[in-house]
Every structure is written in structure tokens, then in C-alpha cells.
Length: 190
Image (cartoon, rainbow, N blue to C red; front, side):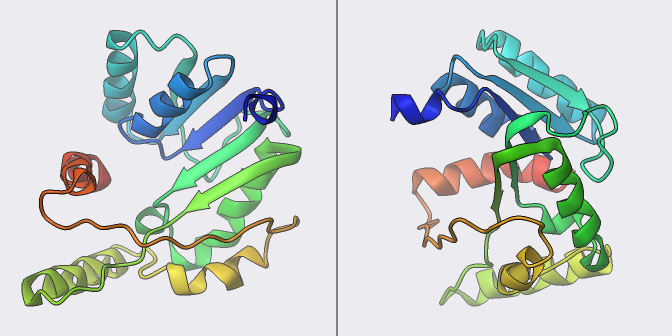
């Protein structure tokens, strides 16, 4: 509701990639400042240019590492948002990452962490692709699959878990989500 949204004024979107979520949040909450952070300078340049083209005035984007956000003081944000962090986080890096996310989130603020499970499918080709993708993520030193580990990982947080929600998303060929997924793949694997 409008009254609930007024309680939050500053949002940080870590590993923002192309900035799509950052811009969507800024469109939805025009009275908030939404900051996108990503380690890739070219990606941030792209996010800035799209935000400028779309005239999204309440966004800003900066280059930085979500594991060490020295550019932000403690308690800087009302909401800290991260999604799909497992392909860029080492299995032994979660404690440090989550501590840093909590550090920049104000007391009473929200840390929103979203991950995706690999799809269940009856397609042998899709199943093989998912297996290869998980292998590549592990060979690169990152975490896959993460969803089964999230409960254990969140016990490291010095705060309460308010909600855990699981959703099933249809990514079948021809769906809007499938189209969006394919358009974001270049940024996911850059």
C-alpha cells in the first residue's frame, strides 16, 4: 500500500546488472532513491544510459563490489536487494557477503534476497543444459545450487528472517518470463 511504501526512502540493489530491477523499483516508488551497484563498469554504463533514456530521475548507479562496499556508511539503506547472487559468490563467501549487506541496511530495514532453483523439466536438453550450467558455476568457484542451502546460510545473519516465500515460475517457451530471461542472459554471464 501507499502508506507502507512511505516508510522506506532509500534502496540499494546489489549486483544490479543491467539495472532492470533498479529502474522498475524507481518507477514504482518515485519518492525513493534507488541505487544500483555492480562490479562491471560496462554494465553500469549501460544501466545509466537506459535509466537516462527512460527518464528515471531517482536512480543512480555505481561501480563497486558488494562484498566490500566502503563507499557506503553503516545503516545507509532502508532496503537492500540482491537477486541471483549464487553464480558470483563462493561457497565460503556467504558469511562475509551477508554481513556486508546487513551492515549497510539500517536497523529495522529489509534485506531482500532472491535466488532461483534450477528448473524441473521433462526436456533432456534443458536438464543437460542445467547440469552443465551448475558445473560451470562450481568450476568458476561459485555456489550452485544455492536454494537448498539458503535456510542454513540465513542463520548466519544477525537479524530475524521475516518471511520465506517460494514460487513456481513458468518459463516455458513463449511466456513473457522466458523472453525476459533470454534478454538478461548476456548480463548474467558477463
